[in-house]
Amino acid sequence: MTKNIMIVGVGGQGSLLASKLLGHLLLTEGYDVKVSEVHGMSQRGGSVVTYVRFGDKVYSPIIDKGEADFIVSFEKLEAARYIPYLKEDGRIVTNTQEVDPMPVITGAAEYPENLVEKMEDLGIKVDAMDCLTLANEAGSSKAVNIVLMGRLSRYFDIPVEKWEKAIAACVPEKFVDVNLKAFELGRGE
Image 1 (spheres, one colour):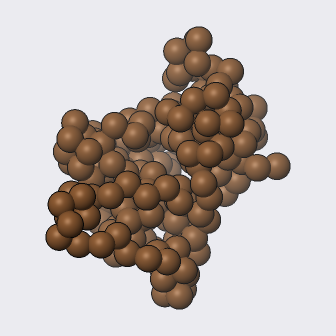
Image 2 (cartoon, helix red, strand yellow):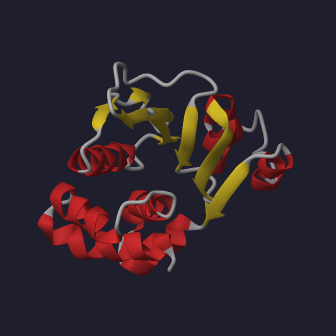
């Protein structure tokens, strides 16, 4: 049975490290894993998507509409944008931070209000938290990605120690402690 995770966000937020970390962890757990390249305007603050698929045998890295078990989102509007990709019983794990897209910056549109509530009203399971505050508490605003991974880890039967080992393997040594703290805060136990 193949499981599908979409990591969505805005360019420069660390989705590449998040997908690398998941890929590393799942490979060490014995799964066949396919991770797509980052798609989108990653250099320009545009929408960015990475797919992580794992199972006994995975043939393609691409996730189609209605196939995502999880959407991990660095920003609420990006979570809402990718709802069509979520399985009926899927879950969104999202940062509550708002990053204004270009139409909002230019004044052509307004940032939608109450997005988490609107998604929940659609019957979607949403796990939303202020990851930026937790990342800062851990010691770096750049650790939002690892806070999100900590939250996502609650939905997997993989021991915390294995997630921590994957962080140590994927993060430069001088940032390991900050990232372990970010993971712990995101997991919230």
